[in-house]
Length: 541
Image (cartoon, rainbow, N blue to C red; front, side, top):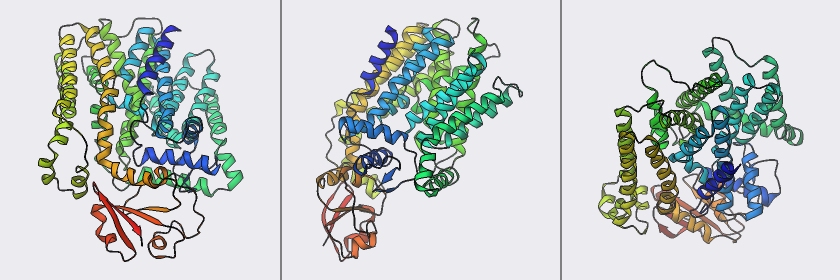
């Protein structure tokens, strides 16, 4: 029990402090937070809304969690991110518990440390996006499905699997069913059509998943008809089969994201490239451990290949890979620390080189800020060049963050090379685990000032005013959330042509990017009231 309390305390210290230190980022963070805020304002908790109109892109479970947090702590950025921080605590406790059950407490501790000590898996628990919660539920659904073959209470495992699968669907949609079915089919084929899950188990999984999802889908259909659900399903299909504007990418996009973003855990996957000799723990439950590893490999490849094929490429689409990737890395780390596996020289070299490159990238950030006047003339994108005009304090001394990380990674690899394995591994993952929140707290607020700071300041200046606010030429949710917009009752809203040319009933403000400004600054009904860091602010005359 003490170790569970210790993990919970450390996780809370890692994920909760300073959640509100930087504004939410457009689109996803602000999108979900705004939907939660509008639930509270409208008292409509059954339908997700944006701009107080139905928004069918996401189910409501995560929005409910954010709304509950806002009811407790107020409508603010901290409350919007708190649910994922809580899920982060639950995730590390779950990883420890599963690792302990698979082998012993040592594996559980390594798994929790590997997850918390890798960049993107750690960072996402400090965000307000939907994926950490979705990933947690779908991982639990797959874990309990795996447990069916090894538990005396297999039907209970099937019920739990279905329940968490239903929660995953309520969090992000039917992609949870798609991923789960693909993983199950691949596992069935891998085992040559032999599987410990019977039709009765599959029936229970489907039943409990249906019951769980119908808590919302069923109510929505009964209360409002099929329209909202039809739009939701249509959007999910379009998302998988077409490329969203600005979110395309090459087939290997997610491969690179996982390699760099999940450092250092990702590097330990390369330790599987070795001879044919297999190493197992040599314990009575080795068959269960081996089977779980098969499930994790299958889940990893299913998610990676699926979202490499999907046209829309966004970083967090492959984030479900963090669970199997971290386990497979922790499995190798566990064997390394037990002396059952040896890292090859090229494994250590790859670890060192990747860590140094990350450290160099961190060290270069302050230099870009310090010497931006030299860099700006070489930037071809007018909007990006204007973003860099933001007045953000930097100093050359801040390169020390990147240099410190390079030193720590180098020290870790030296210890590994000297066969001081446990010390090297602890140094690597603990230093990264501590370094992530420090650098995030120091650098992310400064980067946010470049990317959207001027726009957010403009929206905040309009809080509490009964006005219309509209983004022109680009899509944003920030004007709704940061102006704390209330419902507009004029039937012509939000028609852009009416806001620009019609008989409006209250003041209207507009924002556009400098790259789109020519179309609007000469509009006869608009006057420019300001321009800052790539954004142009206008008011209806």
